[in-house]
Image 1 (cartoon, rainbow, N blue to C red):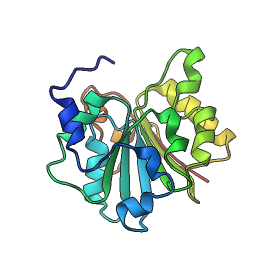
Image 2: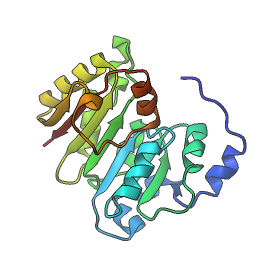
Image 3: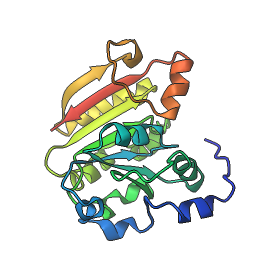
Length: 208
């Protein structure tokens, strides 16, 4: 993926009231950050923020945290927030450090169109790999729930195998999400592009 630079991105990030600049300092303290005891959901690799922002606006009694690695992408997401949303926070970090930021505080993880890392030697980098599922064990609170969407069939099949091997039960699954009878789909920016191209969107919810 080629990232376009965003003019004044440093200023945009520095002046965002919902961007957490030192997320490690919040480990174990996310309820205090939000000032409530509501469930906290995270999106790993939120991209330009369409999905996480709309969820925060739709579900005000849930805390949402969008995680993104790249400054330019994060700056574009920040540009879509016209006012401070009390139940939304952004975090700039690499997903590999997820255990350094959360300590049994998260009740749901969203994996939306994550990098499929198609080469087998890179399989460990996939966000649904055994290595990442081990990391998630240390950030989930009680219930462990993952929602995943992808247009990559190989990643989807790889993910299902790993979920089942780790003891997750499949709660919901669709092999063609946008030709189902659902009317509550909140889309990410990638999803909107893929739907326009008539790509099949695979969807799964797992829980344990």
